[in-house]
Image 1 (cartoon, rainbow, N blue to C red):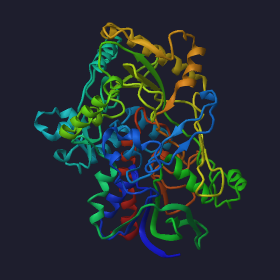
Image 2: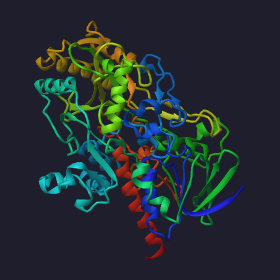
Image 3: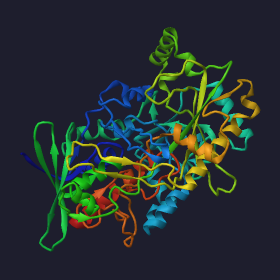
Image 4: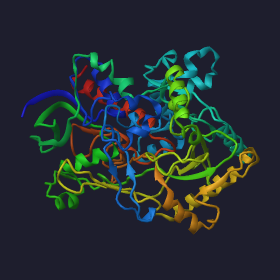
Length: 561
């Protein structure tokens, strides 16, 4: 056992952890340790945008989790990808830059009693690290866009690159026109606070390469700082909690398995848990912080009974409808021959464009599942391809997929340890479609999809519904079908939620401190009390940006300067 002491220990080098390392090590006085269970992000498929197909389900980059059998999915289990490498999920996700809606953050403020989470107060923290391609020439950009977006030209740090996609497809252009015919307005910016509309997603890429948080925040910046240390292939196994002279409890460090031996690392200021919405509650539970009955069941001494740890799991479930088409190019037909694959590879090699630069979803749309919804409550990810599931081969016929998800599910699941061993995966039980409201939105959203596809803009390609099939029409049929064909977009949040003092299920204070344990914060998507109305990666960065500021302020207050 070796013993090493730092000012800050950050557990998890993913989306939040990478930014935190950057911000906390910027002050040369603070020694910062990053502990990452995965390896460095030096696997080539991480950086080629289409490489997510080879990273999901690959032990080199993915924790390889599965959900528990889910009644809402008619007993099915789902693959549950979680990034296990530097950059975390930003190394294997769909690269979509999406903030959600202003109402999400206003709701967080209500639920936490802290106005610093309101949209207007969160906006500067999105802008702080954003590097938006339209602001490369800021002179041609209107003032409202500059108010909403950031780059170095607007005074930000500009690490998080946002670019437009480097390809377009006739079939997706036709879908966008059809959506407009169905009453969904065109938009060129999903990130202004509402996100209603249809348009091509903007993505976290740079010159046709994936831009993950490891490249944005860790290298070369942190690597060049003498006060920064990083342990990769090192898994945190237990937080060290000590009772202080005044009777309070404090997290003073962590036990780490480096593949050969158990190592102890100690923190003089704070331990920050950024292992993600699955692994953070798992580590808390293994450390004796969580629901007392669960801990005792697995022979773990209860350090602090905190029933909300691992509860309140929320996720976006997408219902993938597949339409066969004629007379238009899709990736299915493009990639079904050696010559086609060679052309795709050559285009990427020469220009960094074409299908290999492709995010999993190119076209997006936000709208309402029914007219009585006050805000857009469903999101489309539309793809010029079809397959049975990610990781499976493309179909041999030309087709596109219109995936739709309920942005604000009312179903709540859990993450719970199955054993007291750190090596064992926890039980992930999302409990999808477990409420009547979610089943109703699922049925309604399938009808919206059909309405869009029935418009004249798509008629020249003769779209035919291949999955689920037009014979299914009733609410009951459609909800059951959703259970048969739906998959996760892997946006788990909420498992260590922040909340008010009086909320017994709130794990964190509004400043992301673990209740009842000093010197410990959770800074990742698990902290969100409710899921954002869109993709969750960039909201996690915003959350980490705010946390970094609070951590540095706490240090300043403690030292008196």
